[in-house]
Image (cartoon, rainbow, N blue to C red; front, top):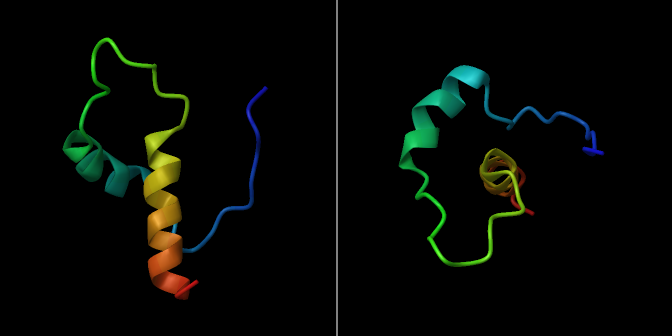
Length: 53
């Protein structure tokens, strides 16, 4: 069951994500599959940059 979370002002819009998504490297073959949503990782980075946490 996916978790829901509060949206933040720093979250990417769908349009912004469409621009950034092709720049995210694909998962490496042969390794453990990704278990995180890369959009959420980018959102977290932008949150840290915006708030200075």
